[in-house]
Length: 441
Image 1: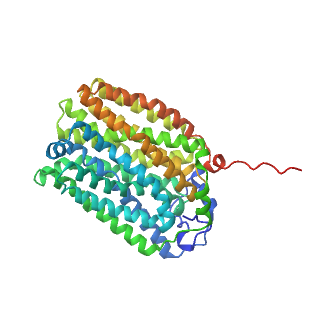
Image 2: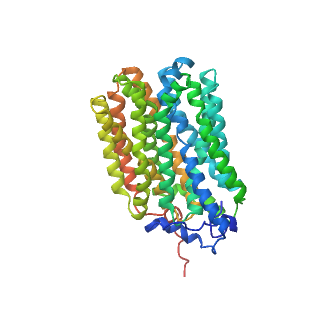
Image 3: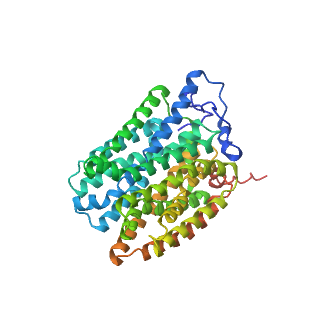
């Protein structure tokens, strides 16, 4: 995937339609400043922004629409609690496997084309799994949808860095806000929507394919109008970047993996935690929605704040502290102040837009962001895989939530440690490339 400096005209950064992001968020502008674009390109920029928001809106209903209906799905398909825990781990596995492949696909056919294919996979998988007759088929079709989520997860930050290099913070904010909105809406309305449509969980999950179809149409229009090309010397350089030498890349991957563990346990198990505390299924769905709703405004403003600072460590500490308080409250008195615990967990889960912002800021070029995004998200999701399975096993073994929630609170300590390292103002290119020894005189 080429950068703006050496790519053809149809891969140049799009013109600014708002104020640039201050600080390091504008570092991508070093990749080159194109000549003023025609009006068509300006409209294409608006279409890009709308398509990015629509894609983000579809990246979590695959998971959060399932949480409130998990008991019905388990009963109908004969799932044990351990298998249900495996189901909550499937997103991480798919994100790791398919996310690592995303940059290679993007270099071959372009990131816009890959994200478009991802939207198609989400739409197909969500629709088809509502007809599944057994656990294995349900898991397989969920994996198809999650493959689409995986490539979009990795490549949308790359699209933002490449086409909006001076607005990384605001565009990541738009992306994160839309993602949080989709997550919250799916959690809040899936149960009442299912009831209104006859009470069948298959219908309640299947209707989200319609939302995916809207995003697919927008990305198809973007792909047809954009006619993106791949290749270029910068993409070859990024392919050779020895990212394993970068301590910042490793810190970002570990930080990403630990925050993903907490986020997917929350999305998969929070309704069950509240239901075990004698809170109704509809209320537990609303509480999960509150967790996501809290992230909507925070996810919009946090990337802007973080991008304006060279150092993001203060945000790492504050979000981890919210998570520790939330898990403690859920363990000791889940029904005592459920709205407070849900809000604190929502703030803690805003580590996701924070790490996305740091990924965009820790590389100088869109090619560097592509490699860093794939490495941090691919390895990060691999790190997160055991967490949801372990939580399900601990819950099944003890029948209580004290031990699982205590374990999640402890995980926030290493998450904070890695986040403090990742939040330092560094560029992976500077760490990954060995300095050349001076020639002997």
